[in-house]
Image (cartoon, rainbow, N blue to C red):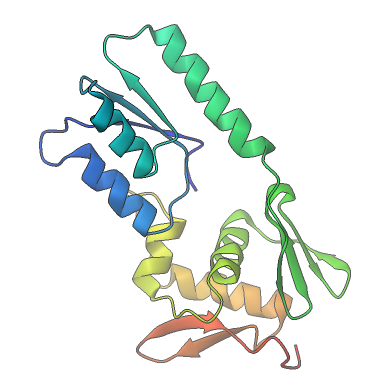
Length: 181
């Protein structure tokens, strides 16, 4: 994720913050979210937490408390142990940002690593180019038309030509784990 954490106000001018949170979680975005709001009823706080908020702080609040809560969310996220992801002879250890193929370390750039993790967390799922762009880039990023294809090309060179399959006109998916890579 491009952010360590997100502060989300529920009272946005165009859209309800809970709708945004619900959409993020449905899309698999796991960035820690701290809700800041004037909505302080118990049922509203419970709803926010059940929708995937990591913390909920009601107005008024001290900025020092906001900073402390954000630091705690970030600390917990970076400190949590994430299980390794495997596909065939490739192992990715998300917390350490390391990738191994047949026991040898593979150097990946940050976007390649993010792309690989996305595929390995969604085995068997076809991901469209627009889904991949949304996960890899900020909302305001100026993404060239073939950026995803370039990253996939680099991953194939490093991990094997059959590691990621192209389904023409549809998207991309992980190749067969048993194929010759």
